[in-house]
Length: 218
Image (cartoon, rainbow, N blue to C red; front, side):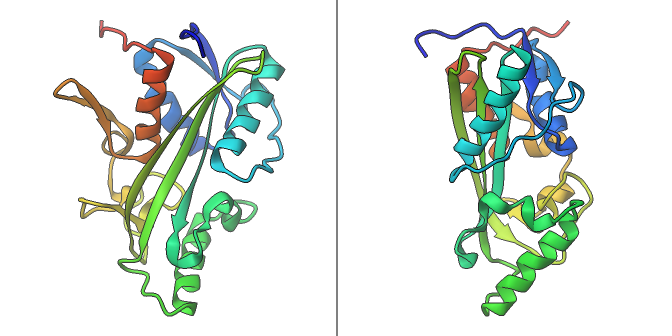
């Protein structure tokens, strides 16, 4: 991208209520008007990429071309090295249809046990690939990761997905025990933006690449 392109209206290309809430909160300080793919009646495209970035691009490009507006999409997942990096790209699929993430977390614990690995303390990390796509096919990508360990049974009722079984490094609480602001809020420390979650970290990089500026509070 030769120069930052203006962003006034942005379609959030997700039908996941939890992701929509987090992504809307991340964008709010930048004065960008957001619309959701669900509210616009867009169907969910087939995500057949082999990387998180590819699936994020599929969702963003489909929404951008359908609405003639820039679109913002995320593809993210839980990676457990002891499970050969599963569930990975299939993080949502492990929750079945309709989505049952309690069952998905139980499956992670069960799969670890079947391999002789103790769930509590097992290494894991979350990955987030964020993409802004324009109707002409141009895209802007940023990725973020947060490393930690697993705990089972899940702890806390905040967040969504696998949050209750993931404890980020340096913390004693799971994502499920943290408020939305603690998990994905972005703070400025010594002139540098910081965030805890994978999505917040990816967003910080995206903001820098896109040249977005936080709006002054009224």
